[in-house]
Amino acid sequence: MLVLFVVMALFGATAWGLRRGEQGGGRLGPVERSIERGDWRTAGLIAADELGRGATGLPGAEAYLHYAAGRGALLGRDLDGAIEHLDQALFLVSVPAGREPGAAGDIVEYLPGFEADCRCFLGLAVLQRGDLHTARAVLESVVADADYNGDRWSIRRHLAVIARVQGRLTEARIDLDEALTAAIDADDTAAAAEALRGLGQIDEQEGDLTGAAACYLRALEEFRRLAREVPGRATDGHRADETVTLLLLARVLAAAGAREEATKRMADARRTAPDDFVDMASHVAFFGSGVARHLGQAEDAARLAVEARAGYADCQMTLMAEYATRERARALVKLGALDEARRVLTASAEGFDRCGATLEAEIARSELAELGPG
Image (cartoon, rainbow, N blue to C red):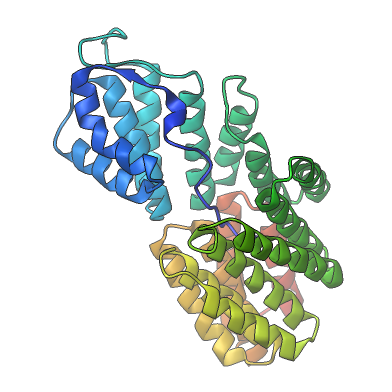
């Protein structure tokens, strides 16, 4: 089962080497200072405020403001806003509104990777939004772009998520195995943990609960080791990574019948969950629903699934909302409400189809067929 959880911390602020005139620098200065501190949320809010004050008349400066606003919106899970800003940034970079590069006061040079980076974060926003076909096309174009100077393995891990949900499991496993090898060779603990977590999700998808639990435990150990070894890593992104891994582990343990251990891991996840990730409460509710269902707590499972779906809808995470819908149907089956379960599963299958999640739609229809005619 998919978790569209993305920590947006792939790139630093100073990588662009933008050369600009005094006027453009004045509009960008507060944004860049926030980025230099690693505070993309604040940078995005400032950039959006600057754009709200009206056009600068400087396409380069506006492109950068839209880029920063888009990344900030992505962190805040304003996915429609992120897509709109990043689309506009790409438009301004490719078609500079009739102005020649070097116009007075404007940015006169981007590093070659700037446009590719805009497309990278656009692809991640579209992926979070649940449009898998578009996300795949955009992210594949970034990996193939010679000018892109970011982490291609990170993007390939996201492409592996798409492959898995669309039923291309062998392709997904190969990509993640290669990503894991590359991360180990580069001594990149975080990337290795993310690859292990992805491999665990493939094992879980294929019904190998023992293999899935082993991968999740190894990923959890790596995330915790990183927290001990890297100052500041124990907050924000790391806590979110650890929480999601604990949630995955709790669900697979519950499915395997390890009741006490599943309950313990679920409690650990609730305690670890950071407050400053707007979608984390929805993740906790969603996985809590699955754990409760496996433990025979069907009423709690149904309630938590409804809560998760509402939270994902608020965050504009369409595909995750469909997962929550299907989880509710499974709880309804346990409760004996078969007519309602049929209706919800039908809606879930149609929703997965709209997202391009081929395998998940097939699973929903298979579960619907098992219920027989209404």
